Length: 309
Ligand code: NAP
Ligand code: GLV
Image (cartoon, rainbow, N blue to C red; front, side, top):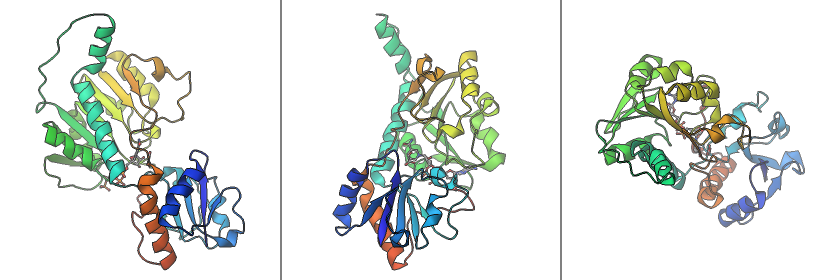
């Protein structure tokens, strides 16, 4: 029995060290040196080569190295009947709370303008701000959307959330599906995207969505670059309808040097670090899913393939 590690973006030795704490006798093979394909019974992956995973006939589980799974599901040639699991833990959820609260408050308290005024030596007062009169709209109320929604409610913002099915979180008004989207958008002064990337949500932050936000709204995308139509956001920023944006994720990462977001005065770029899965944090949950797969017991955080997340 061996675990296949397949990622061009992560250091396998750091992951091996973290996993060995939980599985001292771990046999881990680093792609493309998989050895005998018959010995591979699990794969820990981020963006595996298309078609690769079907070469292991004894594969029992495909484990995403993080919360998102679009980097696996884009492979139309995945082995049939092998479950896919997502990986996240409370550290990662806490990191996302920090990221969203940080950037919501940054927009709410005019920090980009204040920093720019300091650079020019200008003393300009803003506020006081009406926090309960400011609505933060969170698209996606799952493992990474619900905790920031509740934290923002605790700070005093009005919080609305949009998801596929109805939610009952104290302090968060729930809007559901296509039918609820316009009403949700019309009140979102600060929009935060924490949706999974699926065929339904690809390009969802487009001109039509942006124009339904109140004038002067801010946008924070901490989900995936594929949610955003970049030209539409640039046009909405340049027209002044959207005041500012914070972007953590991009269609191409690292963000190419010639991408106009780099130099846009209304855009803050962070390098896809809202909530990285640190190997030390998530090794325990990965080890647990590996143990369950080998025993044939119920896995944790299984992806629903018909929903695509
Ligand atoms: P999750 O637990 O699966 O939750 C997804 C949420 O989105 C659910 O509330 C779901 O609704 C909603 N949703 C899905 N499709 C929808 C649709 N078509 N219309 C309306 N709502 C829809 O996912 P998660 O763990 O919170 O993660 C979300 C995404 O965040 C990940 O896929 C990943 O791309 C991104 N992420 C980014 C970072 C980073 O560092 N930037 C870190 C972690 C995660 P229901 O609840 O009704 O099913
Ligand atoms: C990070 O982007 C993740 O999906 O865990």
